[in-house]
Image (cartoon, rainbow, N blue to C red; front, side):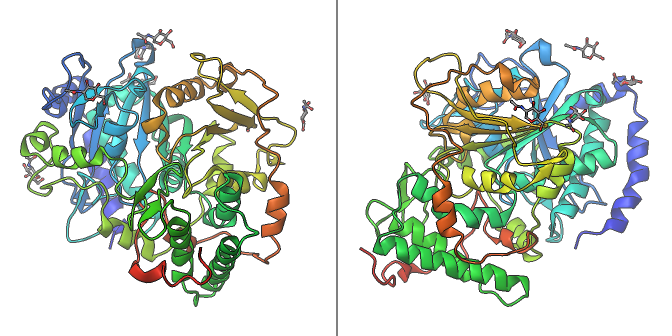
Length: 515
Ligand SMILES: *[C@@H]1O[C@H](CO)[C@@H](O)[C@H](O)[C@H]1NC(C)=O
Ligand SMILES: *[C@@H]1O[C@H](CO)[C@@H](O)[C@H](O)[C@H]1NC(C)=O
Ligand SMILES: *[C@@H]1O[C@H](CO)[C@@H](O)[C@H](O)[C@H]1NC(C)=O
Ligand SMILES: *[C@@H]1O[C@H](CO)[C@@H](O)[C@H](O)[C@H]1NC(C)=O
Ligand SMILES: *[C@@H]1O[C@H](CO)[C@@H](O)[C@H](O)[C@H]1NC(C)=O
Ligand SMILES: *[C@@H]1O[C@H](CO)[C@@H](O)[C@H](O)[C@H]1NC(C)=O
Ligand SMILES: *[C@@H]1O[C@H](CO)[C@@H](O)[C@H](O)[C@H]1NC(C)=O
């Protein structure tokens, strides 16, 4: 297990590291400079640094970072951290398929990413907690909860600043996706508590924030998207399956619930709502896509098929300064990390978000086609959350927003109040920057400048008000007593990657009354 005593012992080491002069640190940084990376386009000319920072006896492992220097001098002093979720999924999904300057194409070659965030600041990708991606753990020692994760991150961060002291006065942002809806608020709170950095804001994409809100809204989401009619046999079946899951969650609170009920509920949906039930499966990260059975999106996006072998090539590991004594290959997600993490249950991060909103701007953004971490879960969470003295968005109203490039279709909608922005991106998946790079970059740029209101808005009578048309269904679903408290245990199903707990091959056939 992770030992806090060891961590405190490391503080003296860190103080010694901070004693480096900037000049000494700059000299040392050269060892992190990536001077060539196989296959990248010639027109990519920015500096990048990466590597395992160096085995840390205290952490009993080592994290991996990859930093791309800002391609726009106006943002030389802004650094954006990006974290993918899991728990246990590598942030190289983010660096090479989402917000980094380089994109791995379907043909296995790189091209420049139109939605690159290095034009908005330096971007720092971190594989964490240890055991994730290129980070490694010694002695099978993994994090068991968000508190340990945040402590580990803060120790990594101090070491990072010791190596890159010129970043110490930057304005820092923390962003990411999915299970990073847990990571980001915990990490931000820890960095503030330790007074390590000046934070400018937090941006969480399709975040797994308050587990009960996810379960509350799965059926509503499908109804709203026109994928499900509750007044059919199928709808009734799924509604029962949902009720079983909610009851199991409630029982879990007192220690005796059957999590399989919820697992079955989600799989019932993904199997039943596919185009060819039994053969294909709904992609849980983008309901407009079909996936192979029984992966239901776990093999998505397709570029992973190229990315995984690329990142495991010896010459790539060497170029990125991965310590090959400990890391022999890259895997998108680590089961060791997620299995150890999930065991102790996972808290809601909603209370942290509420506290953080009194200090910094926060944006929750949602690709509308994501089922697993869908935008209704975000609305469910925020409508009853009190932050900065009021509950929910009060009298604020929704606006449509546009990228400014096209005049017809809105890119999405947003609502904002008291440092909290809730933004939706139309037709986007769980990985918004992957399939909507321009929209994402436009939204992120406005957010980092703390100026969401500069987004072009173009009120249109044809646009449904995202706040309406749902309440009747909500009422219908809330006929069942839920009354769950928001804490622990519910994070067993996490977004990206959803973990399979003993998948049952026959579960589709077993459904009574299916069409
Ligand atoms: C890997 O880590 C070990 C232990 O810290 C160190 O001795 C070795 O030099 C590192 N190797 C590389 C290639 O960085
Ligand atoms: C850099 O950012 C500034 C401020 O947003 C912008 O005006 C400028 O066009 C950007 N330059 C490039 C090369 O992207
Ligand atoms: C970045 O910070 C350095 C050191 O404080 C300063 O010299 C420089 O002008 C800053 N650059 C920008 C673009 O703000
Ligand atoms: C690979 O695909 C990308 C777009 O995904 C394209 O920009 C690039 O030109 C293609 N490269 C080759 C060699 O076909
Ligand atoms: C950061 O700011 C502090 C306080 O203004 C200053 O003492 C320090 O030299 C700055 N560090 C860098 C690397 O610019
Ligand atoms: C919003 O965040 C700013 C910092 O950006 C803080 O000064 C302000 O007090 C916060 N607003 C509210 C309403 O708490
Ligand atoms: C919304 O409510 C706030 C206080 O709750 C008030 O200051 C503001 O004027 C109201 N805005 C509108 C458009 O009614």
